[in-house]
Amino acid sequence: SEKEQALMTRIRRLREEKNAVILAHYYTVPGIQDVADVVGDSLALARAAAETDAEVIVFAGVYFMAETASILNPGKRVVMPDISAGCPLADSCPAEAFMAFRREHPEAFVVSYINSSADIKAESDVICTSSNALALVRQIPADREIIFGPDRNLGGYVRQQLQRDMLLWEGACYVHDAYRWQVIEPFMSTVPEAAFIAHPECRTEVLDHADFVGSTGALLSYTEKSDREVFVVATEPGILYEMKKRSPEKVFYPAPKDAAAPQSTCVQMKQNTLENLCAALEDGERHEVNVAPELAAKALRPIELMLEMSR
Ligand code: 13P
Ligand code: SF4
Image (cartoon, rainbow, N blue to C red):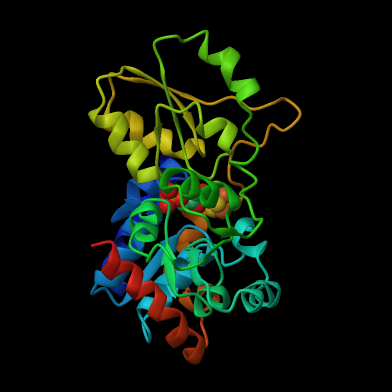
């Protein structure tokens, strides 16, 4: 629309003026993906944050992503369009309870999903994302006990794929955990030519039926490279925008959900709008992500180890 175009022009001008870079996740609204310098999955965005030489990072995603960007850039201003956009999965793992869990297994190597708070990261040995979890856990000596948190579905997937026992924290993402194969299966039979692809935050019963499992970035490249023409996608449907952009001739369906649990979008990701993104560029202070320096220094180590181990 005209209003969107005007906002985008304004955002682009402010980006130049402030020497800012705009990083956006695939789940954000199309207008934000269009205006962003980098659109990516959690790992790609963390890498982009680690490598940028811009003075200001505008992070259109959820809090833990911007917080990670800030930890990687001490002293640099990191702003979010809406600072209250948190990831409920990350918030479901309080630091105190997690530390108590850790104390019960003092010898364990702690692998924490990037969808976690800085407090959890600071108490972890290495951080992973859904695109490098398998590769990282594979590098941990076989005789070492592992704690994996906070996503039990991703943890269960890694455990199954690697045949490796891990102690799991019982967290889940409300968007992905709501898929049921019982609901998806009847839909699949209406599009028999379709490939079924899913994010590892989905339940095992769903992943067991997938032709491909991967992070948002991995799902995207799969659809680009695959010979298949039709895809049913079990992850937040914001990713369909870039899938269609890259493969305009292919057909994409969001995987259906039960009418009783219709929540299919990530409410927190959609809190990012062109309006508040523009406001974050205009008035950085109100939108700034601040991590206490001591905490940031502690949380940085396992993040850096992740970047090294998944090069
Ligand atoms: P990706 O790293 O796959 O983009 O996952 C981020 C996320 O929040 C999934 O719900
Ligand atoms: Fe968090 Fe789930 Fe939203 Fe991803 S989709 S940001 S895991 S709530």
